[in-house]
Image (cartoon, rainbow, N blue to C red; front, side, top):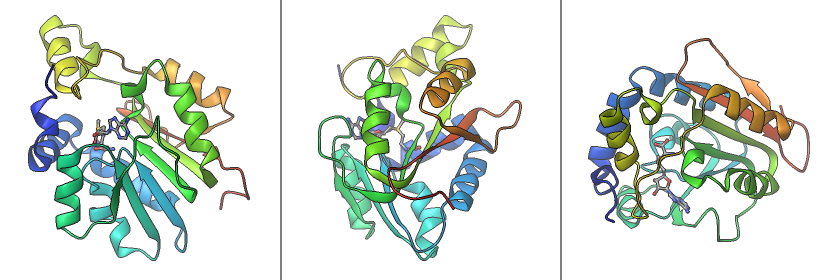
Length: 202
Ligand SMILES: C[S@@+](CC[C@H](N)C(=O)[O-])C[C@H]1O[C@@H](n2cnc3c(N)ncnc32)[C@H](O)[C@@H]1O
């Protein structure tokens, strides 16, 4: 099965995310950017079109590198001078960084989300930040909307049917001793922070 058309063109992807998340997208980027201090090394996995970096982190005094497996997104980002590399977050050795980040991507890796968090947390010296949707079109009451959402998330290995709800995500975060951040009733996503293997979170 072919990948969804949203993964074939970075501009289509960015428009689709803006339509899907609406104002929550900018809120998420601001919340993540506020949490990461200056002067640190940041590794963002499944970075997609690197929009957080382009819109916020690029102007900051920190060293960011994005990792993804989508060759089209990586080519597009490199052509714009963005520091990205290919890395499969499940299979490749993950580089160490002070802050490690993954946004809106965990659901794709079910049933291996827990293994993935273990890998990501082990690569974080200070903290791992996870942003994940908890209200999704993939669990919409309409069968057609659900089908479109599952098909729209396909990366070439078939439709992606799993999505987190609040209870599942909070359960996963708390089983790792994670702290929920900026939680507000009604928000489409939650952010949580897991401590890294060295040092305190500032
Ligand atoms: C739903 S998108 C999220 C992109 C971005 N984090 C965002 O918030 O817009 C998921 C991203 O994960 C990437 N991806 C999928 N499987 C991957 C893997 N095994 N290793 C690394 N990246 C992967 C895809 O190419 C895609 O860019």
